[in-house]
Length: 122
Image (cartoon, rainbow, N blue to C red; front, side, top):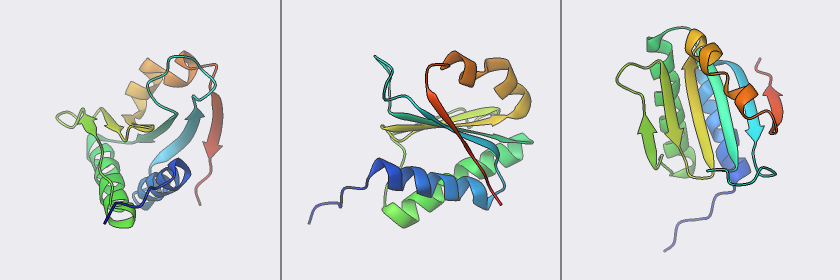
């Protein structure tokens, strides 16, 4: 039995659900498909207010993705200090930042050619 192929859109939807469940803030989706030589198709970027919340967001994403689509990140970095956790799902890379770290690195400007969609949460 082979694993059902999950679409990138489905993966993004489940990632967003995981972020929303622990009140991740300022969520943006960067579409990198039109940019040459990128490492993935999409970035999902969000913020937490503390290292505890950043850790909780990362954990919620992993749990939700694992439960709903039986997938796990290929690679995770930054869990030791939880200022910036990067979760690599191959086609989608999730960046969970503490606010001050996000402002410092300003990925949205760095990837200014990307199509950016602001994700509204309730």
